[in-house]
Image (cartoon, rainbow, N blue to C red; front, side, top):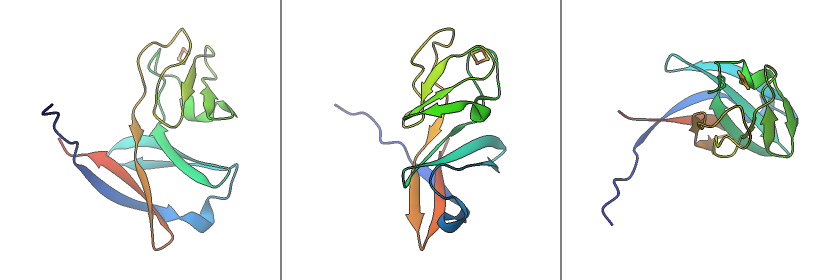
Length: 111
Ligand code: FES
């Protein structure tokens, strides 16, 4: 009961045509480093930062919907930012994605 709905401000980032399935792109959104993935046609966005020790999470290998931090191997779910394995225990930020007129838009919570 009474949970406030999060409000997002959407930023148009790149054309969907520029992010083919299997690719990723790094982008700054509202002063945050964000990595955007196209996984089998669906687009996901998380912060490019591992919550264990600030590792460059976005450079990690993808397995299914999991990304593996290249620094110490923690896994995160790109769909929701959840930390799945140690040494990370805190989620990384994730951002809702919408496609408008073939443009990828990333939602950043309004503070
Ligand atoms: S910095 Fe990512 S697992 Fe340590």
